[in-house]
Length: 117
Length: 110
Image (cartoon, rainbow over all chains, first blue to last red; front, side, top):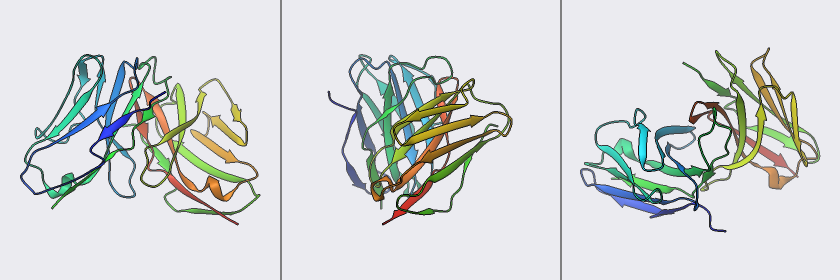
């Protein structure tokens, strides 16, 4: 079956521009996560969705970052007025549920590499 | 706050030997701990999950242990192969999300 897909795979933008990143989770997965990974670093949690709702937005670095999920499926992460420090790989993951304390494995997409010039 | 610590230095192992990677956590013991593999330019791929009440979990050449006294998990790859070269991440379950270590790069030399 199809895994998690993300688009675009690469995005180069100029400082100050807005960008939109898309994630298509595995069908039937109710939980969706966005992470950011800088070169050689671990995963930085940004936001998660359970269905269409986002109970926890505390990981978003600033109010320039927002995310939504419609129909319990596709999610978009929007970064407004991009800055050079936003350059990173943005990873999306989905899982069957959040369960009790993370009993479910997460399935990751290939990521979107964002470069802000 | 809870932290996950992995050795940031790359681990070089001769092919055929057993590779052992360490994951230490602070504060409370997680109910679950997960291990993932990440290749360059790809997202992490799930390998194994171990529960707090499990001492050991195996899958083919992989073995994970969980020591709540030491607050540590060890990840072993036996009969290592060059194809096992990758970065290995451990993640602690915390409510609805995972807290991630920075990963350890494993290099298997032929």
